[in-house]
Amino acid sequence: MVSDGRYVDDEDRFKEDAYLALTSRFTTREAFENFYSSLNNSATKDEFLRAASFYLFMVKNGDWHVSVERSNPIVDYFTNSFKLAALFSVIESLSDRHYKDLFNWLNDEPQESIFPINDHVSLSALNEKYKSEYGSIRRCKAFFENLPQCTQKVLCDSIKIDGHPLKSIKKVAEFLYEIRSKFVHEARLFSQISDVAGTVLSMSGNRVVQTELSIDVLFQAFEEGLLAYFGYKF
Image (cartoon, rainbow, N blue to C red; front, side, top):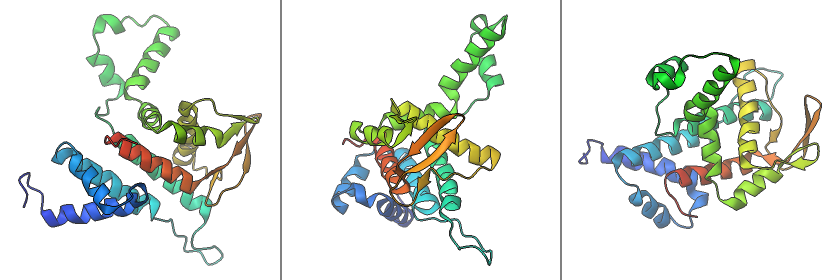
């Protein structure tokens, strides 16, 4: 047992999982070990191992299997919908600020800055402030903004609205979060992200959405974002 109470063999197993999840981001195993050793403390290491191992099993090497005679066992837009939802679960879990619902946030804020709420404009402003501090999309935007600039450009260029690439990585995060939310809250599967490179056309209202984003490219971006979150310098 190590000094913080964890068993060494458990740490080694989780570390092996983390390496399997992120091996393509390191030139050698030694480079991975050096990065892991650079993490500040055991709590940070535990958080890194948790996120990386979840990603390995639930996303990168996990598939949703269908046991229906007339169906293929793995349907790409089924499994990719689940993978995107799980991927955003990992991203949303990476935060130094614990979740607080709107009611508790309002009660914890200085009351003179909150009340009275005189109209819908004031209420909307408070809602926007709450979402900027505690909303899930806040964490997702911050995660993508931490990506290397070259990766941000690849993602922006891979999604076009009426023929125009998305202007910022924030827009990419919002786009991906929206299709994730439609799956989670409305049971709407999506086909905008495929297993292979190619162009997918869809409609969003009266706008034409052109997506050239494969699941592997999204995985690569996530892996870079995960390492960046834990201080890796590209």
